[in-house]
Image 1 (tube, rainbow, N blue to C red):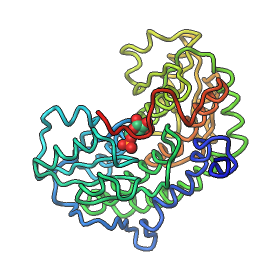
Image 2 (image 1 turned 45 degrees about the vertical axis):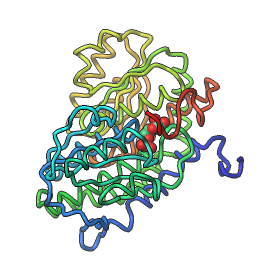
Image 3 (image 1 turned 30 degrees about the vertical axis):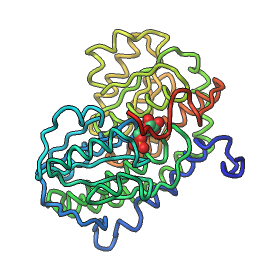
Length: 367
Ligand code: G6P
C-alpha cells in the first residue's frame, strides 16, 4: 500500500499532488492554440438545445455550480443545477430541447444514474462528465466527456473535482465558440488561461505555500465551527472548501455566497469563528473586502485567500493564504487547492484518517 501512495502518507495527499497531471490530461489535447478551437470529440450538436440542466451529488454538484456560471457567462445558455436526489423526484420540466449533463467521478452514484434515466424518459439530450471509464452512466448517456483524472482512492474528492471544473471550462468554451457568444479574442484569452492551469496548480503546491497553510491549520484546528465565503464563480469554491473540512476533520463548516452573509450567518460571528474568505482577483473584489471588514468588525477571525501581489484584501485579514494569480474564470481550479490543503492539514493534525472518513463511502450506489 505504501508503494501505491507513491511516497505520500495518504492517498488524499498523493491525489492533491497529482492535480497538475490530472488537469493536463483533462485539458491538453482538447485545446488547440493555433486555431483557438476546443475539440471535445463528442457528437452533440451545440445548437440542438435551448437550456441545460446539470445534475450531480456531493463534490460533483459543486463542479456543476461552477459549470453553471461559466456556461451562462460564456455561452449565454440558461443553466439549472440540481442535486440528483431532488431532481429525480420533483417532476423536472425537461424535454427534447433540454441538455441534461450528469457529473460524476464514479459514474455509479445511484441518485445521479436514476436522475439521468428520468430525464431520458422525456427525450432530453444527455452528456456525462465522468471519470470512471465504462461505468454505468457512460453506457446510458448520449455522449461522454471523460475528465481523465485517473483513479481516485481517497474518499474526499480532490483531483476529480479540479478536473471536473476543467471539463466544465472546456464545455463552456466550446459552447461559447459554437453558439457565437464568445468572440475569438476573449476565447483565445481563456484558452490561454486554461492551458496555464496545470502550471498554476503546481505552483499552488510549492513547499512554502504548504507550510503556510499547515501553520494556519494548526492555529485554528480547535475551532468548533468554520464559515466559508466566496462570490460569483468562486462561491462554489467556498462550498467545496466547507464540504472538504466537514468530510475529513468533522469540524462543522458552513458556506455562503459572501453577499448573503448579512442575511443570517453574520449572527454567528464572534472571536471563536474562523471565516475563510475567497478574495482573489475579481471584478467584485472590493465587495468581498467589505465583507472581510464586516467580519472583522464583529471580531471574527479572517483567513483570506488572496492572489499573489494583493495588497488590498490581505491588509484586513488575520491570516493570509496567497495563491497564484489566475484569470477569474479559471481561478476556481487554483483556489480550491489551498482549501483542500487547509482541510487536509486540519484533519491530520487532529489525528483523523483522511482517506477513510467515518460514515462516508467513495461511491454511493444505494439510495
Ligand atoms: C460520495 C463521495 C463524494 C462524491 C459523491 C458523488 O458522497 O463521498 O466524494 O462527491 O459521492 O460521487 P460521484 O462519483 O457521483 O462523483
